[in-house]
Amino acid sequence: MARADKRILIRADGGPQVGLGHLMRCRSLALELRRLGWDPVFYGDSGAGAGPGPLVDEEGLPLPWRAIEAGLDPRPGLGSDTARVAREWRVRAILVDSYGFAAADFQALKTTGVPTIALDDLGDRELPVDLIINPNPLVTPALYKWQTERSAVLAGEMFTIIRPEVLRVPRAGGWREDGSLLVSLGGGDVADLLRQVVHALPADLAQPVIASVSPSCPRHLLEIWARTDPSRRALNHDPSLFPELMGKAALAVTGGGTTLWELYYVGVPGVVLLWVENQKHTATVVRKRRTSLLLDIRAGFRAEPLRELLLQLWTDRGLAEAMISRQQALIDGLGARRLAEAIETRYG
Image (cartoon, rainbow, N blue to C red; front, side):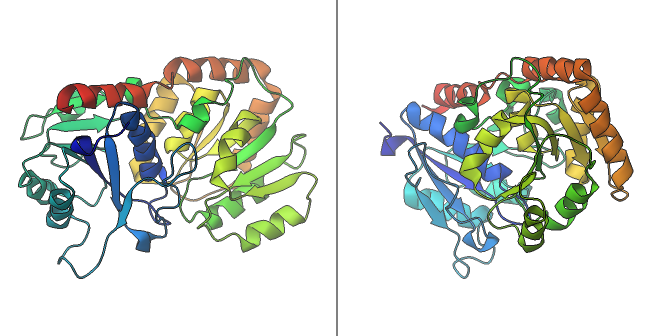
């Protein structure tokens, strides 16, 4: 049972511009912390279009959540404002998963007198905190050697966070040749790129195509695409159905965010589209471990290279099987549990 004296404030970003990956991985960690007796409370921006919607427990009950309110602080949701909320809730620790926090914001959190944890992907900013977590595969603590303040670092695939709903999906024992082609480019507003992708798919692929978006993503034109061939096309905007769709997929086209590591846990070969700079590390993982085929579209999307890569995967069963084996060797699904246990050991 969660205890108020073990309360942890989680300040995470989510919405159409940044997607839902930060919120969802914080939720997964929060659920593991609750099992260890912690009381996680979220502080987030309802104006970003995320709101408390994704923040429910495994029974669908809302997790404690408070919206950022403009006007209470010159910089709502950042350093001094988050410190104020931490004092009000008398937390034992603060966890921040936000690219918007600069060194001065983390310094402001120090005035609370409680330890701060930074959940980071980039390693490109000063993080004056007690603990840094980078859950991306193949990252090592050496990424943070240049930090002025020495922090403990937990990094790499041992700490990659997978949602509990995905952990319940049976892992692939081999290539699901009769499955669908799943297209998902993240939880933000990806409608324009997604339309280009689905219209570029090979017409002679045998499996049905399922495109999946977040509820906040504009989808009118995608719905028209799905209705033109309902026997072979579908559009999903229900996040609760997404783990099941992963488990039924033969191939996937995805971005380089959190969803990719979840697909690796399940075992779904596919093509990774690289189009934003903060996913360059994902490209490094894919190239080193040969866990997907990579298509760099930072200079613009073209249909033919995507078609060629998908046909290569579809016609080479050995390639698909090898990818699944390498994916599942990389991601074991225990990252959130390990992180919760580490937080309990340090601060419990």
